[in-house]
Image 1: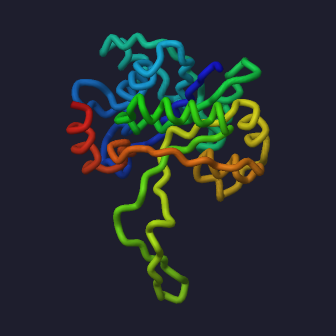
Image 2: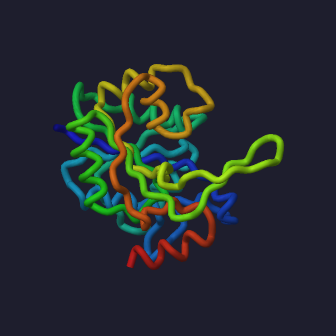
Length: 222
């Protein structure tokens, strides 16, 4: 079955305290986003990669590709106002009728072939597959009254990307109007009535958000 990946990168870099968007920060000799695209290309040169960026970042990205001699094949698509809109734009660019679509954060460059493969394989079989890991820390909920309560962490999973789905299911789900509860693609599919299957992710698959995350990424990408 044809495999696609929509890589969404629309960060501003504010929490990173950076003058450039975080996806363009150089780690181990390459901008973060190039590591991410390379991970999927290394998984399978046959995969169709769709990169979604804010349109005003196109020229800067193209300059970086020229500077770093980055020649992986991909389709560049303009992002939307929200992540939901950006994924939807990427989805609209797919012309095929059937296939499996993974959605991945552009700033998760440390993603393994095993996790990518498991997401595609499970989605092909079950319809959905979302990478996740067990929670290591104790968890408490906060209530409006100011009280808090401990939760059983064995009942909690930390959600990552890739999140993979049958193409036709995604198209139907993303025809819904946007809702604030749509924090990721899994919540969109779930709202449309589709079951969500969790697959094992990996703790190295961090989302680079703060300067501390860069230090971990440097270690993992070696």
